[in-house]
Image (cartoon, rainbow, N blue to C red; front, side, top):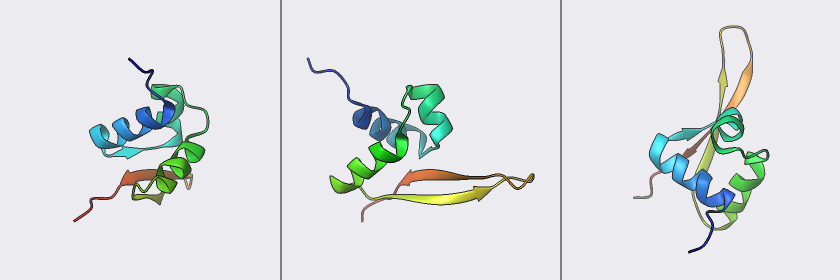
Length: 70
C-alpha cells in the first residue's frame, strides 16, 4: 500500500470540502506549500482555479476550488 502524497491529500480535500485555503492546508493537512501542490496538480491536468476573497477588515486570501469538467 502506498503512502498518500501531499497532492493526494489536496485533491481529496478539494473533492470532499469544495475549497481549500493555504490556512486549511497548513492546519488540517500539515502541508506548508499548498501553492506548489496546486501547481503540480494543474500540470497533471486538474482544473483548479483560485479566487481572491476579501474579509470585512480588508485582509485578502486565495481560495482554491476544483472546477467541474462537463
